[in-house]
Structure formats: structure tokens, C-alpha cells
Length: 542
Ligand SMILES: Cc1cc2nc3c(=O)[nH]c(=O)nc-3n(C[C@H](O)[C@H](O)[C@H](O)COP(=O)(O)OP(=O)(O)OC[C@H]3O[C@@H](n4cnc5c(N)ncnc54)[C@H](O)[C@@H]3O)c2cc1C
Ligand SMILES: *[C@@H]1O[C@H](CO)[C@@H](O)[C@H](O)[C@H]1NC(C)=O
Ligand SMILES: *[C@@H]1O[C@H](CO)[C@@H](O)[C@H](O)[C@H]1NC(C)=O
Ligand SMILES: *[C@@H]1O[C@H](CO)[C@@H](O)[C@H](O)[C@H]1NC(C)=O
Image 1 (tube, protein in one colour):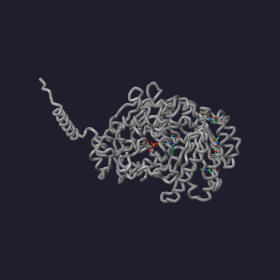
Image 2: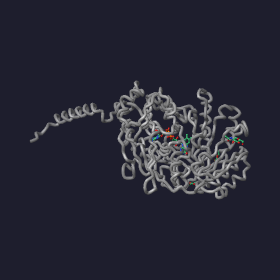
Image 3: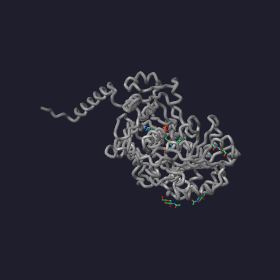
Image 4: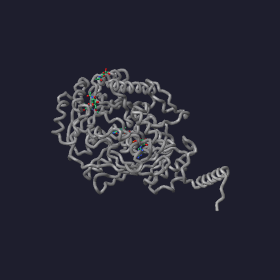
């Protein structure tokens, strides 16, 4: 028979019970603890400690590297060394199940962790990271499903690998366009690529994901399991978890060859080139098979030391004849150089100079970037940008030599066809993605400051060229200093919804290093003070 307990004694009993439970759990170290909201990095953290404390709990294929290991430099190399994450130890899990254990170990020891794959993440916010890199490079299995409509991919696959694997078996899927870029790095922010005219962005084909949350729990994210998180993973995913594997639609591979046509024009032809581009794209009505064209302004000394060339490349899903009918306007513009051919799809990246061994994919340069999202090209704005480049080539040739101003034009029907509210990716009416990209010398603050001024000037010129539209910055091209509304969408419900989900799925803000929707707290020497350039640059590097 139970005796009634006084409220006071009841509270005492509960408190004692809690202490007892807490001590037991602490002894078993089986439950993540968060001693501080912001984990401090353990001063004694090194590869030997991690090997000793964690190694035996992980699968035999797991690799653990520290700065003294030969592979360390390669595995921590970054496309942009401007604000690199500070990596103390690399753990490369051998199986998906290891990821959860690594995260729990980090939580128990107040260590921050960062998943990496292609190393192309560009945001300055990555520079606020110090801790353990969880390298996804061993997780690259691809399993085509029996119905041949989808495949499971592990979290370490990248564009070129996926494209080649599927093509050889008769399929294609949505990836980024550059072979070197991690499929998930791109996908978690949206994922633009050559099949988006037909099939939409990568996020539009994501069926389900296996995700490790910030507390180390491994969950399935699908339309029936945590569907609210599925929405967030499709555009703001870097803020929510580590994807160990995912199921993505695949499609019959289509024509055996794609046609490409590359052109180099001088700046004298800028207006006819952009007028022809606007006719081709017709404000988002690009023929779906005209998959991707992009062009750079850059200095080619063979052509001119001061007048940048317009170097454009077109990729068409299908034969030359159909492609050339759409390129007639471009063929009519006198070119310095042209090159065209028909190749199987996996060779298109080489033809467009974004294969793994091409210049654009290479790591180890310090870069200053800015971006913009456009609907149509403004010829006046492009002329202003071009002429400002010429002026820089005269005034600062060492800086100008490292600059490329990228203009991308995808076929976008499959992107526009989706309800924009259905994914966290907010910018479906941007038909053109722009990127200013300056490779700067590692130790030249004066040139670097000039590069930032230039980067901001070009971005502002792009945006001034579309006075009726808001400034948009694709999260995967963002430099990390942009206002969050310009990255995750201006509709107030978007950030509100993302932050509510953040509270639900990552209350400790463990994922805050890639354009974070909840910013690191002040007081770590990395506040939100305004940078110099037009009040837009925050000082992430501290
Ligand atoms: C040369 C170049 C070409 C590009 N081309 C395209 C393009 O065609 N289309 C496009 O959409 N974007 C493109 N981008 C942008 C690209 O999507 C981003 O830079 C992306 O973040 C790179 O992913 P990564 O794995 O290579 O880089 P990483 O730096 O390794 O990762 C970037 C971010 O993604 C997170 N991440 C990586 N893997 C996982 C995972 N398994 N689970 C959870 N988080 C993960 C990391 O934690 C990090 O925050 C390009 C960038 C460059 C530099
Ligand atoms: C382009 O299309 C969008 C709809 O996607 C429309 O709002 C805009 O007015 C169009 N712009 C022009 C210049 O026609
Ligand atoms: C530079 O221009 C020359 C001459 O037209 C051309 O052959 C070469 O491919 C160009 N180089 C680049 C990187 O565009
Ligand atoms: C094109 O850009 C110029 C220069 O910024 C701007 O004045 C003009 O309004 C823009 N035109 C359109 C149609 O938006």
C-alpha cells in the first residue's frame, strides 16, 4: 500500500533521483552532454588522443589523421584558403554508423565537428571553425534500386564520380556542374546542374536521407519521417545535420552525345553577345536541352593585356544540328577562337573546363568572391562591369590577372515548374547565377582590400542592373558576409521556419559553420561588426 508523499518530500525525491540518473549516465558516457552552449575546443586535442579515446569504437576502415601525418595537407586542402576552417584532427569514418559515434564523442568532449567532402565550401563562416573534420571520402557507395528510378548514394560522393558511374549503366541524375564538387555540398543548398532544365535542381530529386543530428542521433528524413526537416534540408541543409546517405531520382541517360560549342570574343562584341544570350534564355524560357552555358570575363594575354576576353561555353543535350540552330546568333558574332564537338555526357565537363583536373577545380588559392542572382542580363550593367575590369587591368595588373567574372545560364524549366514554397531553396526565379572570383596573393593586404572593393562593386553593378528585383545570393556561392535574408529568402516566414526547425533539430547549434541561420553568439572575438566595404562585410575571421 502506498503512503501519500508530501509535495516537499516529493520534490526532494525527484531531485535525488535526477542526481542519481545524472551520475549514472555521466559514468556510462552514453548520452551527449552539452556543458556549454558553445563548445570550447579541447586544448589537448591531437590525433593520438582521438585514436586512443575513439579509435577502438569505430569501424576498422576508419582513418584518423593529425597535422603530422602525410595525408593531412591533402585531406584538409580548401578551394578557397581565405578563411579556412582550423582543423586539429581529421576522422574519416569507414562506415555510416561511425559518423554518429564521432559526433557523440565530440559532444562529450566539447569539440566542434565539421563534415567535409569536396572542400569547395567558400563561405567565410567556415573560418570560425576549430575542431575535428569528419571527412566523408570513404563513403562513396552507389546502389541503383531495382526499379531503376532511384539510387542510394553515400554522403561522400561527388559530381564527376556520380555522373560517370550512372552513365556507364545507362542513367543520369541531377548533380552540380563541376565534377569536383561534393554532391551533397551542392544539394544541401539547392544544387544547380546541367539536368535542371529537364528534372529540376538536386533538391527536387531528393527522396530521403539518412541524417546524423547534432546530438549524434541517426534519423531517417523522408516525406513520412521528419518531413519538416526534409523541407529544410532542401536548401538550408548544412545547418541541420550530416547526411550519411541519400536516395535520389535517376533517369534514363538520353542521347548518346551532347554537343558543345566554345567561343572567345573580344569586349567589342559584348552587347551583341549579351543580347543573343537574352534572346536564347528569353527570361527563363530556355529550350530545355540547351542545358548550360557560362562565360567568363578574364584576361588572356595572347589576345590583349588589358581588354578581358568573353570566353563562353555552351552545352546542348543532343546532336550538333539541333544545337547549332539555337546558336546561329552566336555564330554570327566574329570570334577570336571557337571549338565544337559532340561527346558523351561525362566528357562535357572536360569540354566546358570544369572537370576534376581543370583549373577551376584546383585547391589552395586565396580567393575573394561575390555573387548575384539575375533574371535577365542588363547590357548597360555588363558594359560597366567590363569597362571597370579594363580600368583595373591598367591600374592593378597583378590583381586583374587573377580575376574571372562568371555568368551562368542554365535551362530552368524544371526549376520553375516547382512550387517555391516546397523547398527551403528560395530563388527559383533567378535564371542566372553570377560569381566574381579573384585569386589574390596570400600575403598582400593592399591587393586583397582592392579585391574586396572590386568584388562588391561588381555585385552592386549586377544588382543595380535589376532595380525592380531584390538582391539574392545563392547560399553555395555566398561569401558569408551577406545579409541572411538575401541568402535564405526575404519572405519572413522562411527564416522564421528555418529557425524554428533549428530549435527543434539542432538546439545546441552544432551546425553553425556554413552560412549559419543562427549566428554564433557574440563575445568570441568574432562578432558581427561591419566590415569596411559598404557596410556589408562582417568580420568573420575575427
Ligand atoms: C569550382 C566550383 C564549382 C561549383 N559548381 C557548382 C555547381 O555547378 N552547382 C552548384 O550548385 N554549386 C556549385 N558550386 C558551389 C558548391 O555547391 C559549394 O561550394 C559546396 O558547398 C561545395 O561542397 P563540397 O563538398 O565540395 O565542399 P565542402 O567544403 O567539403 O562542404 C561544403 C559544406 O557542405 C557541408 N557538407 C559536405 N558534405 C556533407 C554531408 N555529407 N552532410 C552534411 N553536410 C555536408 C560541409 O559541412 C560544408 O559546410 C561550385 C563551387 C566551386 C568552388
Ligand atoms: C520575367 O519573368 C518573370 C516571371 O518569371 C516576370 O515576373 C518578369 O516580369 C519577367 N521579366 C521581363 C523583363 O519580362
Ligand atoms: C587565349 O587566347 C588564345 C588565342 O585565341 C586561345 O588559343 C587560348 O585558348 C586562350 N586561352 C584561354 C585560357 O582562354
Ligand atoms: C540596367 O542597368 C542600368 C545601370 O545600372 C540601370 O540604370 C537600368 O535601370 C537597368 N535597366 C533595367 C531595364 O533594369
